[in-house]
Amino acid sequence: MATASPATTIEDLHPDMLTRALRHLDGPALAAASCANVHLRSLASQPDLWCDLCLATWPALHHPRLLRLLSFSPNSYRSFFSDAFPSPSPLTVIPPAAGDDEASLPSELISAVDLRHRGSPILSRVLETDTSTAWFRGAHFRLDALDPKDSSLPTLLTAATPEDLTLNWIFIDPQRRRAVRGTSRRPVAIDRHWITGETVVRFATVLGDGCAIGVVATCVEETGQVREVSLTAECVDGVCLSGRDGLAVLRAAMEGSRRREEAAEAERRRWEEFSGLRMRRKEAVSRREQMVDLACAAVAAAGFVALFAVTVFR
Image (cartoon, rainbow, N blue to C red; front, top):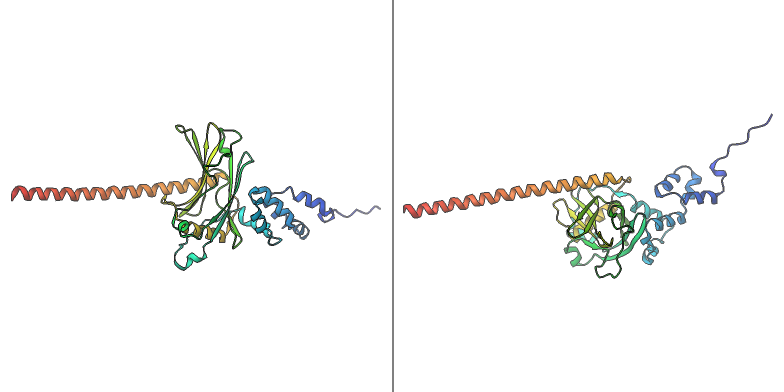
């Protein structure tokens, strides 16, 4: 009587074959594979896998300084991916940045910016920003990935499809070796200005009801050129945060938890809710100002009438 052959398990496959298969996975799938069993965990934890995955996801990481920064330990690329790929969780409280707490703010920020159109990279840039100066911390929190004086600007593959843009703007604190994704990957709003022939594509991450970090990419409809990619942090009142407050928000986001990847519709809905709240607050402020103006006008009218009566009946 023939005996049944033992069942083949995944451990029976050659490690090189499994490693080759793992290279075709994206980050979440690779992390999930590492939780399957001990054998896959050892293979999925290879630094080369996570290095190649990070460089393919964020081409800006090929910058020499970032390569040195991410090579300090075998698990640095995996740690970077777990920081930069998921969205930061909303902040329940926007932390203040005053007094002794200011010393804990990042003294330098590195921005890894990758702009793609239909999956093809059209802009890959690294910004190194000194955030320790009084000028930066006192001015509006604003970073520009493009210099208007650049002779060559990134161009869309098809001029009439700015909605196919995707953006990765990763903030890196080189001292604490922490990172966070600054904005949504897909646009949350697209506004076409027919008079100027420009399209404004907005990417944003809403960090609670208090503030949002947004990037505006301005495209020229006729030529498809992207002439502006600028990032700002603004509060719910529509006021741009100062550099000091923006750094406090980023520090809290870096140290906070991460949430599972959201669909583009969910990110767009969060932005619309934030925009609606901002609009309602503006309307409330406008109504209060109108009431104050009416009260001042009534007081002035009453004073004029009293003065007129005194003059007439004196």
